[in-house]
Length: 605
Ligand SMILES: [Zn+2]
Image (cartoon, rainbow, N blue to C red; front, side):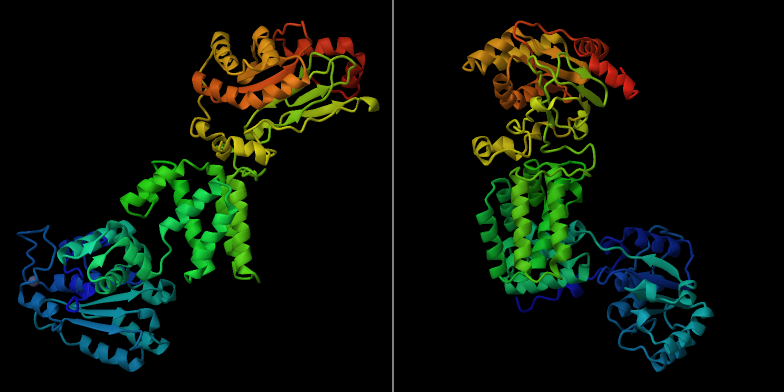
């Protein structure tokens, strides 16, 4: 492979159409030639290696080509590569093109020499083209010497100034140039071009390998081609993904997929071992953080087919992301990204960089296994949430409870307490703020801190082991369906509740209670279940997740919530309006009425 010609040179585009990734610019230039609208000076700006100089050379060659016939072939605006002018351009022997690299020739004398030649008209062809590369490097004096010529050049002279740092170009120059902003070339485009080069050179190359090279080149075709050349010679023309990973010292996707899987399996040990492996292989911590951030972002955008094309990877890696993405909730990925970003920000100033990364990884593991709530208070509403602690209010009160919008008046009573629990996993769930609580000290209510399995923060590790898959993301079935709310009837609910009851037949007392007390449909798709005592309530709340899920899926209504109400044995439930319930309460406890009046509370129904 010694005789492998440097691709960057051999495959340097020779026509406008072969310039990769800058179509808007090449089209504009072609149209300018076609319509005889050539500017006196152009400024090509953009990152290195994206085709600025190449475009400038093709432009110079084209406007000098002797075979361009705008009358006969108005749409063929490409150099013929065969005429005398084109030939001399191709052999770097044309007198019509002057290139000056201002990075190394930036003195006044250099510019003067150049300016002197401006006065001599072209011998062959129509135009003399001066390309000044890295023009921002010219010294101030050189700039000034150049400015004069730029102001009044002979008609046969065209200037093309190129720079990677547009902001360093003084306004007097900017205003005299037509400016073209060259874009970073997309990974996809670079990879495609590398594929073309590989095939033309009969080099074995895997798609993933070419994508990785393109990624490493960061938008620059020249870099991509020179990396490609190096790899062809290192690997004896067998450019496999593994070879590229080893030679380019890039972190393999496999590492990140491995780590994100471990986030879900609560396996802190393995995560730390993978990190250790990466560090031992000589990767810098920050390098790892950037890679992990990219990986999490890729997972996030792969959750939606609409954004999956934002992934700059090969088709097979895209597929892998797509398959993996739905293991994670958006909330998890956002929070993990947040942790990662924080770590990245603090990395430079940290005294124990490794510990910082390890801590972040541990946080992500905790997050992935549900021990940390990914939904912070300020999280954006409307995101699919992984977990949410249902607000459990358990205050002894007189039956029936008054439910006012936003407030709930609770009241201590001597009889059977009614406890109500809302299994609600939406962010605005905490509407149950007790407005007032008049309670006698001896009746201090016990707040129930139990959290139903799969529904919140307080999930014990034991519970977790039992139903890991559900713990990973209990709301996975909701994703993307949060707004679906089909109508349903009492009959539908009864049917599903009956099916559900079949599954808890072994819990005889609960089974019998639920069998004899039908679920009620309250407003806002709240399904209310009725039990006789705390023990039953607790047993049912363990199963509530399952029932709610079943109701939501089978009724195609993802707004359904469930509440459990403790009723007195023998009482049958009927739906009552809030005012009825309020009246019933005040009847039993006149103090409530007094309180309402004294505080000037208005009831909204
Ligand atoms: Zn020609």
